[in-house]
Image 1 (spheres, rainbow, N blue to C red):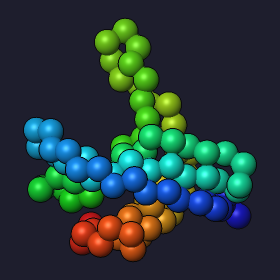
Image 2 (image 1 turned 90 degrees about the vertical axis):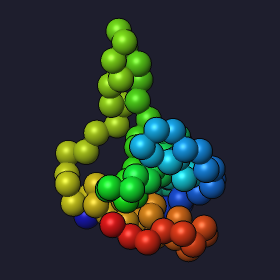
Image 3 (image 1 turned 45 degrees about the vertical axis):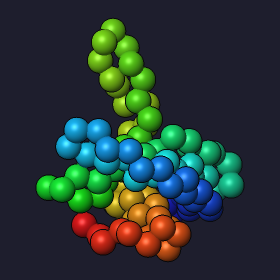
Image 4 (image 1 turned 180 degrees about the horizontal axis):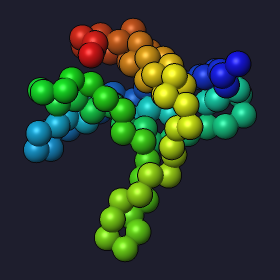
Length: 95
């Protein structure tokens, strides 16, 4: 059984930078125990919507602070966040 996402908070925020737009910031809570803050919903013309998780700059390079061990859980997380975004903001067209 995968850890359940028990809360998703969407903070709409539009900002265009180069080839992509930041559409919103997101905080999620997993199993009412762990909260991950600062997830971004991004959109590009070529690839549509995708999630960007927090990173840390280390010696001039950005490194992941969160990684998946299970691709199915990644898809579950993405769908849960983007569906919530769609229900609250209404401009998500799916990808």
